[in-house]
Amino acid sequence: MLKNLPESWYHLLTEEFEKPYFQKLEQFVDKERSQYTIFPPEEDVFNALNYTPYEQVKVLLLGQDPYHDNNQAHGLCFSVRPGIKPPPSLVNMYRELHEDVGFRVPNNGYLVSWAKQGIVMLNAVLTVRAHSANSHKNQGWEQFTDEVIRKTNEKADPVVFVLWGGYAQKKRNLIDTSRHIIVQSAHPSPLSAHNGFFGSKPFSAINNALRAAGKTEIDWQIPDL
Image (cartoon, rainbow, N blue to C red; front, side):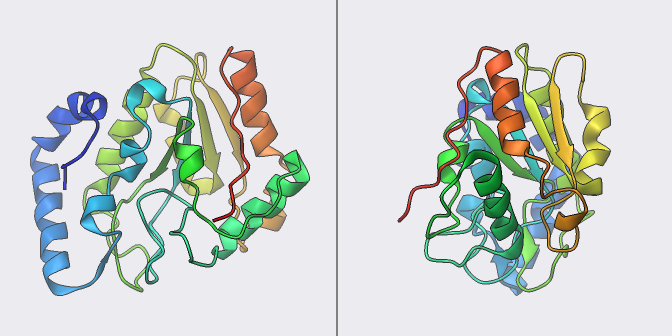
């Protein structure tokens, strides 16, 4: 699973890969792949780190669980592959983007351009069994991704941590708020978007924080494909 990780992340996380929990996790995922369809494909599991090397990290956006329908997940939270209809949470994100920063809704849900600008688009759990939400929770992924959050927190320069919903907000205790910025609200899911996500203007808040830190703002516009 660890092929193709950028050297910066690999170096930071080497000790995790050698711990018993991670070896058990690898065995679990390998066994699951031998018996079921697992998303995302193995080569895409660490795309959140592949697309955003450690030294380029400006923002960490935390999701929960990969999409579990066919051809959706490719290793970035909230993003789907080209040609796949944006799921409801992403549709709500696009609505808020339009209201917040004048975003033009694109013809796709492929968010790689955000990752390439310095956003680690990290799910707390990195694999899932097809059509079975949360089927790989509590197998060790959370321990690993908590370490990714800790390592990001150790960066000397300010990082914007984006925590949507109660699950993500439980990770606040991993973040030094005296050095970093937290942007939080309700989750964009249809279950909660009307209870505090819509109108929260998170995207302009992220750019305001980056600007205040002397960093380049994110160009949120996703190109048509």
